[in-house]
Length: 283
Image 1 (cartoon, rainbow, N blue to C red):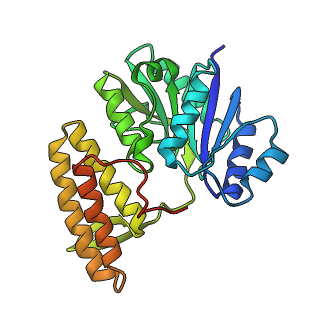
Image 2: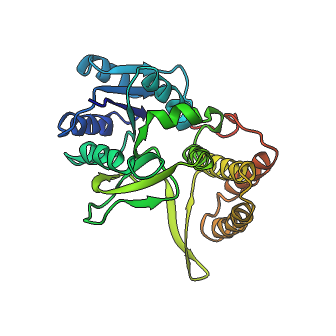
């Protein structure tokens, strides 16, 4: 029987983490192992997990390493634990009872037809067949361990934002594809810190906190240059300009820290300066 390990990276979100664990325990196809990587949470995460879930593999880090560092460590722990598949989960998602079962069935069916590395759940269950998708995310993705062993682990120096994009491009570069499994449902009840507005009659979504703006722009520009996606890099500069205009129009009086974060992010992405930036932290 094929075995599944789940990797959850969490930070200061014990209430939603417990809801997710409840969803995992009621799955029609329960995983063999659950690994929680705690990015130095300051809430009750450590106390609650150790007291109520001693059967889980709990890794507490001494500092916040972001999603990139958390999944780097969690995937290593899962792969070296000799499982066949790894399911990555953010700590703020909810699963249907058959989410994992449908993902596994979809991955094993597609593996007979195409070179596939991972499958994802959808936000709303549908009757459509599996649909190819360009990128993966950590939100609810089932990876084939054989593919991970070929391409390696996430780049922890990206810290947060874009680390799943880089991982996607690396898989694609090695000939792998990804698919939505439309019968597998995963929802996300928490918003991602973005503002939604209109600028010149067009929708515009952007992060409102400087640290999010910095890492998002830095990492995406670095990744697009690294993988020679130059058209996307140019589009990113135009998107940055639109966000700066929106900040000037809608974010007064706190515009300069946000514009500075965008400009620093683009500059550091251009010169490939990665890692955790002391100026932009949320610890």
